Length: 180
Ligand code: ADP
Image 1 (tube, rainbow, N blue to C red):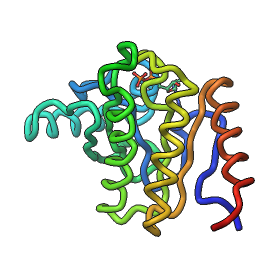
Image 2 (image 1 turned 30 degrees about the horizontal axis):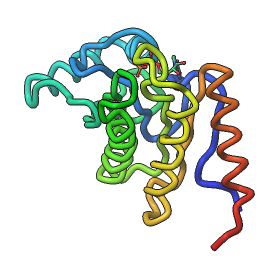
Image 3 (image 1 turned 120 degrees about the vertical axis):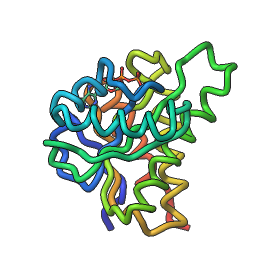
Image 4 (image 1 turned 90 degrees about the vertical axis):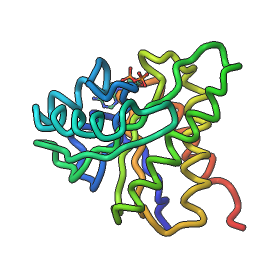
């Protein structure tokens, strides 16, 4: 049986899925890295939608997630979640990173989405060590989906080689585990 989790090397803005996840910052006003790439590909409608969310509910705290339209992207919607900034590991970073994945999955479920694509949240500008972040991401998602049929398909989209290698290894390890 094919895993519900797949690892893709490439650019998340090209993903033809129900919803892609943006590693946003709390302002929701765009930024560098994957956030910038998503806003560029989506066009100005995305920033307008983010401004509406900001007006309605203020900033998005680390670990939380909000949803908007997707403008010109092939996806139907964008979930904006805010990962933690790495500050040495003693500032609740692991918990906040796990929350970012779990709350994004929950929003996808609430919107009846079947497929979702994640970037490696916090592993760029926010400086989270990639191996530790990959473990958290993979286990948060695996744990969430074992008890829920939706979303059916989860893609980890890795833009850099290091993340791709880490996620591919985690997926292989999972495949090797005996089925309970
Ligand atoms: P953060 O501020 O959460 O660290 P970044 O955007 O700086 O967010 O980086 C998060 C991850 O997104 C990094 O691993 C980076 O390689 C990756 N990334 C950058 N551009 C893209 C893209 N177009 N598609 C998928 N991942 C991307």
